[in-house]
Image (cartoon, rainbow, N blue to C red):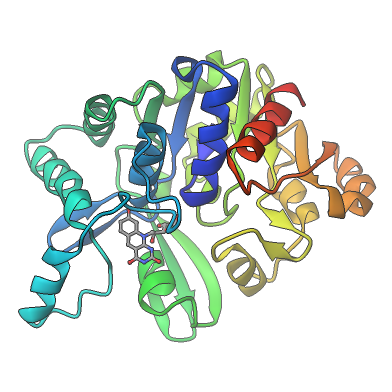
Length: 302
Ligand code: FO1
């Protein structure tokens, strides 16, 4: 499963109820990784790890359930503006990861070790161990995705997106093998530009997906002209892309056989199929754990 954060986490929780978790490999976006207060943060990797270990704060969609924020308030006392919220329990993950990176341990190994300690039975792989950062070009200047989304609450007008470092990034160990040997490759319901986009920007990952072999299924993160969550709508329109499942079909037509769209978008089915992609109509909303599992079942049987 190619994955971003929040929406992907719900889907993956359902998938791990639909199939044995040991059979699932997750390839996670690293484009929104960032350094904050000297600590290396991997928001999507952590969201997926916490979700599959059962400790994710499901209401917020990130961080650890019932966490406290004493570290952050102490930083504020010291005069830091601290606009990125790191919970006290979450902090241990970032401290551990930063220490291990300083010892030259690869991000994929660190991710594997953290997931193992937290009891995750699926394999979680960062898309790459190399530097890759999603930068947002806006009317207020160029900034990190977290600055755009968390600090400025998505307010600046989006002019473009750059995947810094993607041209030199190699897939992390295990990524290409996992893609080539899978029965089914699923693009989780995630932002096509800032979650799936950075993964596909790693050239060897896109090339591996272009080869036919596994069934390749994408689940739409959009319903009509809106994203189910997050900044996908705002970013897609800023890039001059129509916010529509048809745009997903255009972005994915070389790497996907089937696109699952929401029932209310059924009228778009023929436009999608004209692009050479099979289109399956289903309820893609995941309002509870039954709906998460039902959508996962759709994706593995589509
Ligand atoms: N999202 C927010 O909207 N505000 C935050 O303060 C915030 C902190 C945060 C800390 C750790 C982490 O793993 C994720 C965090 N997120 C926060 C979520 C994150 O910004 C985005 O949801 C993802 O990067 C988008 O995929």
